[in-house]
Amino acid sequence: MKILAIESSCDETAAAVVEDGRRVLSNIVSTQIEKHKIFGGVVPEIASRLHAEAISFVVSDALKQAGCELCDIDAVAVTYAPGLIGALLVGVNYAKGLSYSSGIPLVPVHHLRSHIAANYITHPELEPPFLCLVVSGGNTLLVNVKGYTDFEIIGRTRDDAAGEALDKAARSLGLPYPGGVNLDKAAKSGNPDAFKFPKPHVSDNPLDFSFSGLKTSVINTIHNASQKGEQVSVADLGASFLNAVVDFLETNTEKAIDLCHAKTLALAGGVSANSVLRSRMETLAKKKKVKLYLPELSLCGDNAAMVASQGYYEFLSGKRADMTLNAYATMPITEEM
Image (cartoon, rainbow, N blue to C red):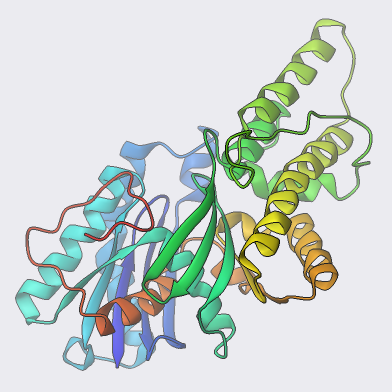
């Protein structure tokens, strides 16, 4: 079964064809990074316009690379939530047009479910159930993946996501967009013990996250140094802040492993490409004697192959959409359309 998928939730216009949820026949990504770099972050209106310009070519290229015609496609999957609403609508409306004109079934796919599914492509042997730490620019979740379309949130961020905190720290340090990636690079030469940051916790749920205090702390550190006329080492402060964020992620993940008696752990989301986080999760997995699955680096960021993979399992579960399908800026991973 071949799934054509479309992804446009943020600043990547992507399309892919994946067979049986695991075999990637094509995976085309048109990035907008250079367009947004001058603004220091994604400008939603610009993102939407660039999606509209690129989407037709991206879908055509995905079909061509896969050696497929539209008539060879069994379903069209599309990211419909969560994300930038204007950007999502470009992909959703294009997918609806394809479905309507061709009669091919339309399958709505949750963006975070797709990030988890990136592991199915990298590791064809992986099957639920497993515990997954989902870490991205807008979300930080601990998810009990009970089945391909059955998810239980056991921990979530109460405020900022880990990726958002890393991006804000990078911008405050004067690093270019995309902040998280460049902070990871700068931190490689820094001392992770040079600066001390508070250890956050959420009292009423030990598995929940809160990164707003850490974010405020690093900004205050930079401002205080500036007011004193002191020079802050970007590498040292970046390494120390990254270490504090990963400490929090690791601590709660270890608690979740114990609580769920997990035997398998997966990492997902854009921040899963972070070298420190990947290394620490490998160490944690060895310590707890659990099997660890990490998505291929090329599949950590937004792409349509992961949407097609999850779309395959959503299709098998009977999930379909009609022409009333809308996009949603926010939606829990557990919620059905």
